[in-house]
Image (tube, rainbow, N blue to C red):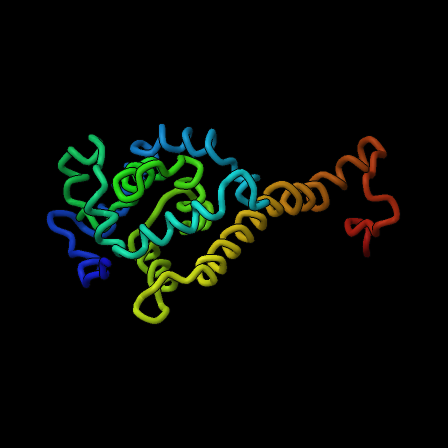
Length: 214
């Protein structure tokens, strides 16, 4: 069994300010994870993750147990970072402060649990990240600690299930906000009045016209 060490705490920056490191990290993540992002969408769409379909729950829990038992230190130590970190600016970012992509986690799982499917790796990263597809070490360690808080540090399927439900809810809320709430507000507050006045079209007949209130 592996036990998390104290090295998962954020390391100090050398040769770059926190702000510079943060900007570099944001620039590096999409570039380094461009192919990974495509792989993720092909492997497990957000809609499938939100509905809890498209992956093997038993395999997912096994992969989560294997990954969490070694702590976030082991995961970051297994990962290879791409050429985007070869520049002077990016080299200043400590390894434990870098973000991981789903592709990197998939490769790490290939070493720890050979045969783990890309879909399982996608679902696991989305569970930890809340659907974003990128992992920050502190959040990963928090998730691992919550899953292994039982007697003797054993893996808890119940704690893992709570994290997964929270992440699925977050994805569902984002979907609702972007595809339902935001379009409705755009129409109600910005488009309804011009359309009603200019063309007579009103998609909400009977609803009070706030622009005509005295």
